[in-house]
Length: 283
View 1 (cartoon, rainbow, N blue to C red):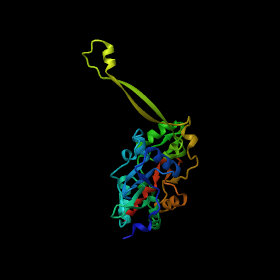
View 2 (view 1 turned 90 degrees about the vertical axis):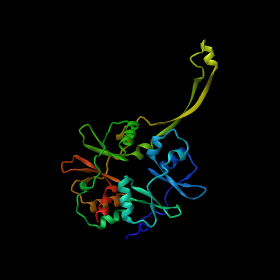
View 3 (view 1 turned 180 degrees about the vertical axis):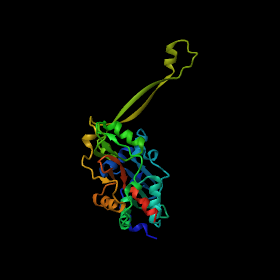
View 4 (view 1 turned 135 degrees about the horizontal axis):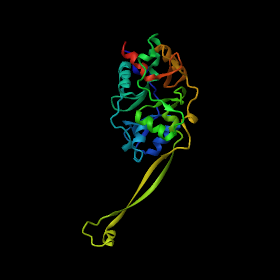
C-alpha cells in the first residue's frame, strides 16, 4: 500500500475558529485558495472546512461557525492513496484535509500531489475517457457578477470562455473573478408594527411598533467582462492526448484544469487534475 504521507503537504494554509467571514475572504484572496481547513484555536482540533461556495451561499453570515461545513470529507494520515483518490473523485474535491486519530490537522492532500502516480502509469488512454462532463462554458462578454453566480450554480470552479462563434478564447476560474470583488455593508431599518386588526385609528398601530436594525453584506464587482480578466492563452490539450501525458503537463504548469479541443479546434470539454485520479482507482 502506497502511503499518503509520501504525497502530502505538511504546511497547509488554514483558518482558526472562532473567526469571521471577512478573514475567510482575506485569506482566500491572499493565498488564491478556494478551500480552507478550519482548526479550533483552543483545542487545536480539526473542526471542518470552508469554501468559496460556502461564502457565496451564506454571504450575510458573519461568523465562521455559521459558514463552515462541519462534516466535510477528510482522510487520516494512515489512509491509502487509493482511499484519497476515491474520496476526492466521489466528492469532486481536488484537495482534502488529512488528520491524525486525535483529530488534529496534519496536512492536506491535493489531486496535483497524486498525479505523479498517473504519470508513472505511462498510459495512452485518451483523456476523454475521464474528462468531466458536462462542461460549463461562459460567453466572453458576460459581466463578472452573473459569471460567478453561473459558476456557483453549475458547481464548477473553472469555465472555458467562448466567443459568439463558440470558439475558445480563454479560461477563467472562480478565484479569478472573486479576486476582483469588493464589498459593502448596508444598514437597514424596518418599522415593525405590533398592533392588531382591532386598532381603530392608524396612530394606535404606530404607537405599538419597534424598529428592527440589521445589516446586509453585498458583493459588488467592477464594470468588467470575463474576457478582460480571463487567461487568454490557456494551455490546451487535444481529445487524443493520453492521461499520463496530460498528468505530466498538469505538474509542469501547476494548474488544475485544461480546455480540450478536437482536431478541428472546436471546444470538446474541460479536464481537471481531479478527473485523472480515476485511473488510480482502476489499477
